[in-house]
Length: 275
Image 1: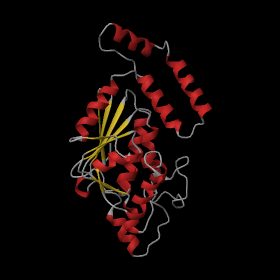
Image 2 (image 1 turned 30 degrees about the vertical axis):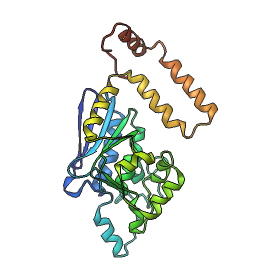
Image 3 (image 1 turned 90 degrees about the vertical axis):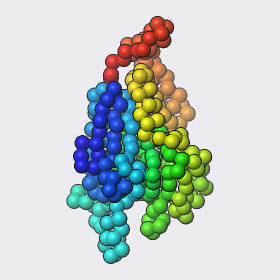
Image 4 (image 1 turned 180 degrees about the vertical axis):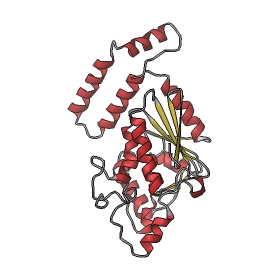
């Protein structure tokens, strides 16, 4: 799709690859723009059933490009944040995408893609790279992957929606420990803390296998499940229970749900129609 990200669609699965391998897929302005553009295109893509997000080369994403830190070292105070240069956005406080700025949207857009997104993480996921993987629905991580909430090393705080997303996955004291110290932890520890869904020898291969399995399920039910689970954190009990009933009512007796039942009874692979 761009010189920073390549997308291949096969069998309803979008294989999304960060392709700045020579820089360990670090986040420069072009990468921020590519993440937003790719996520927006996937939101409207016909026939999409699952997404795998991964990085080429030695790492998933090493975080913010070192050039940004060079400018900071000179005392430069930028008028706009990562992913907003030239936008006239008026700085990080400008809400360019609903509740978010551009850099935050580069992470949150993956939650808005209507189908499951699996981040396949290897090498390193530091700072912005760690926050990027948090935007996925699931995170498959190699055991020796090195991860860190690294912003404090540079005198900063996580600002790509990381503070919001971490709280949905781990204990508050754990998050504060990692944020205040910037310590590096492994994929194995990420699993125990709640940041990784699975530890895999080959995260991308396993993620693609799971994505293909998801692609074989009722796409209406998969999308409804993502809507429900995304809303669960902010819904009251009453709102969440009602939302479940509304989604289920729409599914029961629908063509794809009937096909799922028939395929199971007839012991054959289902043939679903994409939304």
